[in-house]
Structures are given as C-alpha cells and as structure tokens.
Image (cartoon, rainbow over all chains, first blue to last red; front, side, top):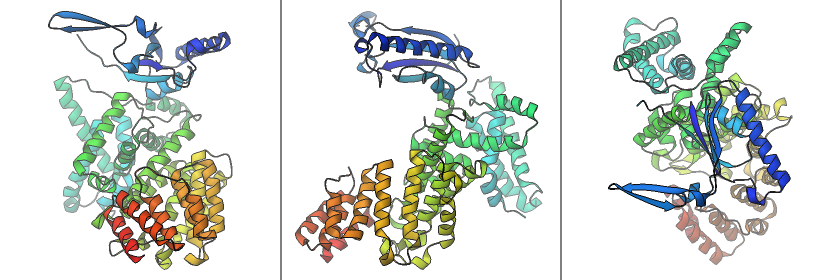
Amino acid sequence: MKYLVLLIGDGAEKPWTEQTEDEQGASMAKFGDFDRACTEHDGVELLAGEALSGPRDATVMRRTSGHVELTDGPYAEVIEGMGGFYLMEAPDLDVVVELLQLLPPYDIQIHPTVDVTL
Amino acid sequence: MQGLEEVVREEWGRLVALLLSQFRRLDLVEDALGDAVESASRTWPVDGAPDNPAAWLMTAARRRVLDRLRTEEVARRKLPLVRTDVVRHQEGARTMADTGSLVEDDVLRLVLMCAHPALAPESASALSLRLVLGVPTADIARLFLVPEPTMAARITRAKKRIVGAGIPFAVPDASVLPDRIDVVAQTAYLAFTAGYSPGTGPDLLRAAASGEAIRLVRVVLGLRPDEPALVALLALMLLQHSRRDAREHDGRLVLLADQDRSRWHHDEVAESTRLLAAPCLAGPITPLTASYVLQARIAAEHATAPSAADTRWDRIVGLYDLLLQVAPSPSARLARAVAVAEDRGAAAGLDALEGLEIPDSHRPAAVRAELLSRSGDVDAARAAYDQAIAACRNDVERAFLEERRAEL
C-alpha cells in the first residue's frame, strides 16, 4: 500500500525554533534513523519526503467560475502546523506505525492513497 | 451427531480466519460462510450431517467465494485485499515444517485484526463478536442497545476501514504484542460491560451476551494461555458474571448486599480464584493487567464473603487504594468511597466523596444521597436524590432512586 504521511503538528515535540542546537541535532538524527529503517525494512520504500516551509509561505488557490482566487496562508488551521510529509510504500498500517515511532513524537496523519488509472 | 448451531458456534472464528488467510477478502468471507450455514440448515436435516461438519462448511463457503471471484473477473473489477503477513509466515513455516500452529495463528491474526487500536473501541468490540465468535448482528445490536441496522452499518464500516486503512491480518512482533493483547482485553471487556449497563424492560441486563465476551477471552487464551492481561481479565469477568442470576428480580436490579448468595455461580468464583493465583500474574505486568487483577481481587472479596455483613471492607478499601495508584479514575474513587462508608461509617464515606464528580453520571449524587440519609441529614439527602434523579437517564435506576427518596 502507498501511504501519505503528514507530520501535522509538534505534538509532544518541542517546537523546532525553541530547541537548542543539540536538541535539533538529536531530532535530525531521528529522521536519519527513520530513513535507514525504511530502507532496511522488507516491502518498505520512501517514495518522497520533504520538510515544508512555514505556513505564511503557503498559498490557497480556488477557482470559481473560471476565476482564480489566491489566499495567503494554509487552507485550514489543522494543517497550519504541518512541518513535512512522506509518501511511502509499506505492507500495512502496523509497519508504518512501527517505523514512524523512530521520528520525534509529532502528531501524524497516516493516509492511504488510492490507485487512479488515467 | 453435532448440531449445526454448535458447529457454527465452535468453528465460526476458525473458518473465518482460514477463509481470510486464503482469499483476503473481508467483504466476502462472512457472507460466504453465512450462505454455507444456510445451505447446511436445509440439507443436513435431509441428508444427515456430514462426518466432518466444519470441513463441509469450509468447502461450501470456499465455493461461494470462488463463485463471487469468478463473477468479478468477468466484470474486471479490482477489489481491495486485506493486508496480511500470512505468506511470509507460511514460507518460514515450510522450512520449519511446522504447519500445526498455522491455523491457530490465523485465529490470532483474526482476533488482533478485529481488536486493532486504529478501530473505534465499540466497532472493534462488535466486529470481534461477529467475526471471531459468529454472534448474530441482532444480538450484538441488543448488547450495545442500538437498532440492528445501526449495528450492521457499524460492522460494515469497520470492515471497510480495515481494508482501506491497511489494518493487517497479522501477528505483530513480540515487542508490541503485549500492547496489542491489552487492546484485545479492552475490546472484550467493553463487550462484557455493555451487557451489564442497564437497559430497560427485558433488556435490563443482557448477561447472556456478556457471556460471549468471556468466550472471546477463552478463545484467545486457548491460543496464548499465559497472557497476563487475559488471565486477569477472565478472572475479573467470571467474578462479575457469577452474580448474574442474583442481580435481577422481577425486572429490577438487586443491589449486591441484597442478593441471594446461593444463586451465585460458585464454580466460576472458584475458577477465578485459581486464575488469580496463576504464575504469569506474578511476573512483570502492564498497568492495565494490574488494574484487572486489583478489580478482580475486590470482586473476589465480595464473592467469598459468607454474607454481606461479613464482607472484609478494610481489605477492599486497601485494594481500592492500590487501584487508584495504578489506574486513577473517578469511578474507582466513587467505589472506594462506598467501601470507606461501609468500613468506617457514612461520615468517612462522605469525606472520601468530597469534590468527586463524574460528568453525565447520576452515581456520585446517588451515593452521596444514600450516605447523607444514613447519617440522618434528611434535607441534604433529599437534595442529593433530586440531583441524582435529574441526572439519571435510565428508567429502572430512576425509579429506584425515586423510591429511596420517598422512603426518607
């Protein structure tokens, strides 16, 4: 299965900007651990993964009757704190949850994708 | 000859597990098995029951699934499969030539899939009763006090979520298995307590359905006999369940102190006592298991007291003190306050109740009213009863409270 993993909030993790340099280093190391564990795990592949810039850089685009409307900021408060994402292939939800425990304790949304044949 | 009903009752979970491990189609197995049972109910009385009834049902169900799959192939539809670790494990098992445990593993996979933490607890409970034990949807609906179509929809949604979210039909690593067994225990206990949450009329208590939750735990214990959470939970449930025949009289609840103790099931009390002495409970246990053990020991104090007056309330208070350390909850505090009142008098009980509130519950006010009435403060008792009656949403219990208030 393919999963979109959204790191939607700091959760139990101290906000990045409040972390000391050592703490930031430790957080980064966890991402490295996660990356390696995914590579080593049977049937798991990280297809994409990026950190996102701050919410003030986000733009919402809407189109009503052919007219493009752009609004500054993210679509909803719930994703205001979204810091990054992964797109990963994994055998099942249990494997995804097991691997994600290597990351800092963010709040995470795990969302399966569906195959759309064009 | 084994009756069809008995075969279905004994074999349902195993057949579901086998069909699921073979076809991975959660949307088909239950219907296919249902059709097989229906067909057996027509042919067995005429042709006689087969020598191996479970194998007969399996063959019939498998044929149904294959029929459906053939139809789909024509339609070229691509349908989602349950994720599973079966292939990986079977490859491992082949080299170890250990095929004997595979079937049992499939039942464990089924239990762990139904009681998955990513499902809502009530859905997990209902699904476990349906898929592992084959309890009819109508009975599950009655247990949880919802209309049958609501329960059917809930079960269907849960099955879709399993496939959609990728909840696997799998046994996880030993490192996370104790946590997952805890969820299985919570799932079973939720079904059990649902049967004892008072309904109305003939549904006042649904003890028979609660008994199914005990059967669920027994099934899993049959596969993993030394799981501390399940051993402790079985002890707790058996102790509570042993009082079922004495809890209800003429459609009304009978309080513990007023129950006819000769109607308790003393064989179940004895089994619980043996379970509580199990070596697996002496080792390291999870907080959940510890809370089950303590609640069971409290229930055992009641179950083994020769009469209500002979109850060792001091020991019960001590056990509640421990329980509040392991698993603090307002309802445990409330129960402790009741025990304190029995042990040291109504005034001490009222002190223990101080500041205790449970949102949407009439119970703290009801207990306060009872203790105020015992200490002779009639006005305050009446006010507390009014508060309890206003908050009570169950007809039977409200009638009981109104009666107590009138007696003041």
